Image (cartoon, rainbow, N blue to C red):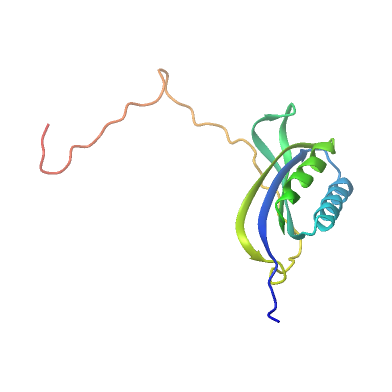
Length: 148
């Protein structure tokens, strides 16, 4: 009898935690999500802690958030259950899930070590002083061979 491959989907979920969340709580959330994925018959490939960064707009009245990325594989109902659990965690302010691939071989996809990226110094650099009246006018040069 031929061996059949178990084909699943590959997903990623990015979720934001409140910036003051302690490391112990971040690890507890990761383990909770790992448990959800494994109970649903999936496998977590990797968690990436992208550190505290400034958000594009205030999220839950905070200008900064802790960015987390989860890469995992499983059946279609897995995303619904994972997002349901994220909604129940108070320090999670936003999340978004995306399907990356169909037909991924479950056994061939290897689990990778969790990654923690060093936070970027995102201090605001002072803007250069501009002359009064706004920006300097744009002066285009005429192409060679043509005169004004």
